[in-house]
Image (cartoon, rainbow, N blue to C red; front, top):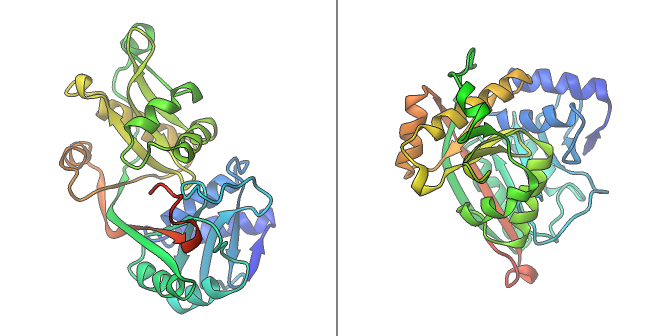
Amino acid sequence: MLVLNCATKLLTLEKVLKSHFPESLKVYGAVMNINRGNPFQKEVVLDSWPDFKAVITRRQKEAETDNLDHYTNGYAVFYKDVRAYRRLLEEHDVINWDQVFHIQGLQSELYDVSKAVANSKRMDVKLSSSKAVRLSVVSALPDTSLLRTSPPRLTYLSVADADLLNRTWSRGGNEQCLRYIANLISCFPSVCVRDEKGSPVSWSITDQFATMCHGYTLPEHRRKGYSQLVAFTLAWKLHSRGFPAQGNVLDDNAASISLLKTIKAEFLPCRFHRLILTPAALSSQVHL
């Protein structure tokens, strides 16, 4: 195991990962954030350097942690050789097996290999899988001049909005998610439409892997074009900072799939996989 701390080597890694799109997108997003101030306190672990075969991003050991927070306790994975990934996973001190956490990536063997190692640790494993998408570079935004001067207004989220996002997210509704969303809003780009009272009615945020997520419009404000405007604007924000605009969408989310097709998003050939792993000792306390 090697923890890559050198700024020059991390920039080199970023360039190498870009040559392995789309499978490397999640790790690439995390590494980009590390190289731009590291607001989420992440680090990179590899099997070797410079000829690495597996790379994992994780929270820094010194970062404050909650053992029940599988949102924040996130690992992104990319490998050139799945056997190298398994060996890295099995190495001492690469993964904190005493907490609830998640592993994510865009490669097909990720689930089987991760589950096999997790089973040897007597961990419960919950898998979710969805379509992976990428938005093309947005060269120009729609005319939003009216939305910048009078309600409804196009703007960004604040930490005060985290409770609303927690209550409306299918993956949320708990203390850990509330804290996680507040941290995402503090650290990464977001976009929202606010009504005349200043309350968000449509929004999207960016996560620790530079993935667009929790795109949502309140039911009473749907069919007004807000979701498309929010998605375009957040994609433009990401592209303007040099990031790819990437996301995931569940197979049965017909409305979001239709929206993504409308804005000509690219549905990637690989799928997104997220595994939530729970130690037996914590299974009665965790919110999945």
